[in-house]
Length: 439
Image 1 (cartoon, rainbow, N blue to C red):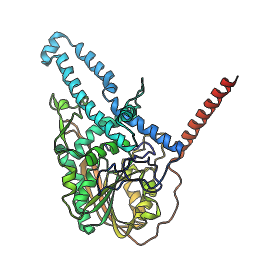
Image 2 (image 1 turned 90 degrees about the vertical axis):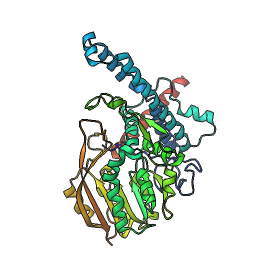
Image 3 (image 1 turned 180 degrees about the horizontal axis):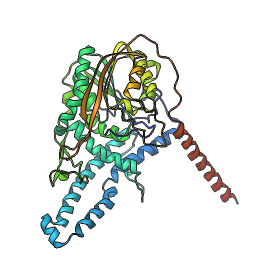
């Protein structure tokens, strides 16, 4: 399942469109003329502090990766040691050696997570290496939130999907039909938005196909990882991750969870340079806030998305922004299921519609010229006895001439109310502290 977008948060190491809640990036952080860096907007001091706090929590979740496994490791070890000597002999493994193998691989993953933390310091201005070291060190006693722990683990699995040989089949299922459609409908050199781009491999593929590709992502975990893969740049097969360490259920082979994955399977730099007409940039921000501005009106030849449209809290709002960006005659190409990422989160608004509902909404501003069902996996473990296979709708929708009309209410009402309550409690607490100090 694709990573869940759970907050109205944006990243900061890449260009943020007007109106997006992006933190101020470090100058030159993208490391190349083909990457669009900078910031078109400013956050006020309070919002900047809030954004930085959220960013720090994400970074600290990378730093505490192995710590967050300790309870699970202890439970596993206790369970194994409860086996009788006869049962251990039948199993044929030494529990202590087995746990050592797991912990050694977990240490490798922790080094990868630490590298991601170090890379993250490029996303906010850091004055010195010593300051950077302090910035990524969690406060004493810090415990990462469960959602951040989950996202760190899904980030390691996402390396497989986007940047390994083992992810080739999934990329063939999802990336290939989208890029083939681009080639049919959009001339080489056309401007293409790739929203919900994760670690950036889809943006790189669109660039290599000869297009001016702009990726868009707002998960900090994904943005930090994409910064490593696209901007820092790694040679082929120079990093190893163990994404399935504690995925103990449904294994076909006894050591399937101990299997390491080498990444990346390509050099991002070499691949980006393979096309004379292609270029690549990244935008950090929530899709609607990033692209609803006047500078994006009829400015794009296409939007190419993979497992994206169901990240909307209000899909009608997404459709209006898509129609706003894509010039008449341009195309919206999409593949994915309608999982509605916020459906199970009681703290988020979620408008959950069927494809039968969504199709006529698209047809207000688009003519659907291709539609078919395609099956696809997402971050599947090839060694597992079970898999999630999505029956996706693939379609190409051509923008008509109808002007965008209508208004959507805020999809962040619940979050904004909660934030108001939090700030009021903080204000009351501070007032109480001052009153005590005066007495």
